[in-house]
Image 1 (tube, rainbow, N blue to C red):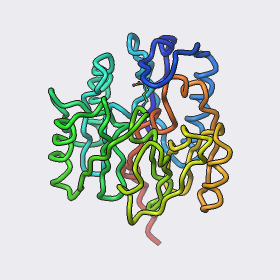
Image 2: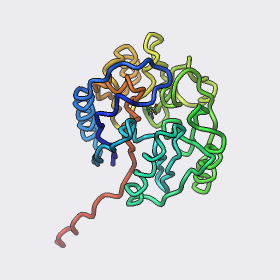
Image 3: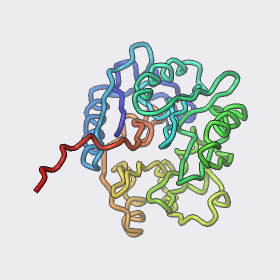
Image 4: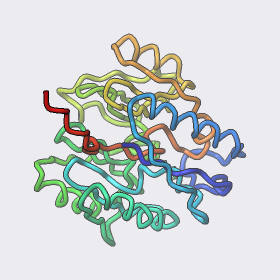
Length: 263
Ligand code: CIR
């Protein structure tokens, strides 16, 4: 299942940390977001689309509001105060699928800083995610056998701006923004050095949703056997959002199928 949220006209007033503000073409961004949802469906996701959240310019970036694993959903407390209400709005949606846990003050944590690879959880140390947030996440996930590891991040917003999974045992990494030593024992594809923003890919099992804006890194991924679904993601990239940021993806039980007719 993939939960997304429609974007509203206020997206132009988004938080920005590393980029200069550029005008966002809201109607183009909405068309690209619709194509992104189509790509999620093509990859096998059932897409639940929530309405835009008025007064919250960054609410389209639902990834930051929760960390969902098979056993539990941890509702975050985003590092940007302007984004805190987005997490509260996600809680009732996820409550239908998982028991909930919460990051509480003074902890802060953005979902974009949390990379789950099997039972190993890498957590970015960024201005959005503090030590208390890391410790609370660790306490919520440890009972289910997850190990957390803090990872310093340089020069970009979130851990997953710099590193994401593209297969069960393969990471896509920009080594200029995160130290490869943290990922020893895992296969790594590095981004093309001329495409520093290319480290954010959305792994959905057999397919990987990936921005069309990074052809050189896409060629590296394809050479490594990764099956890409390209999407145009340029408009929301101006808001520092990538392809993982716009969805929360998790497994749900198959709906009950009718009993087979006895022979
Ligand atoms: C922000 O600064 O919070 C938004 N403009 C971008 C959030 C992107 N989310 C993500 O990388 N998970």
